[in-house]
Image (cartoon, rainbow, N blue to C red):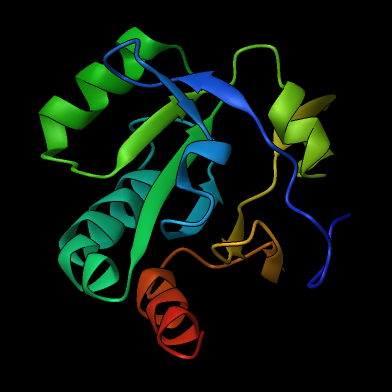
Length: 154
């Protein structure tokens, strides 16, 4: 598991519009909130994405971009974004490489079967690419507001 003070692993992932996003593109320019969520269109994940979107302007005022990552594909992200008016950039990690790099995959029993799933997690990364906050197993309700407070303290 990554922790505060660790360098944030760079990545290259497609977004809902199939454009490639990298962490390094923000280095020196903006702080980054990188949040990992389970799946598009689930109630908690939808509420979390909407909350981050509602606060996106406030994050931007503090020199911060918000990126959401799940194992869903680009098409699913696009439909999810359009259906719920989500404005934060959603990235597709189909092969789970970035999820593994950030240590957010966990084994969880689902219907009596152990499955690998994403643990809701958020990383606040500063302009130099260093993790300032690593939050695992978060509760999505009110989480974006809590993260905004952390960003304001950077």
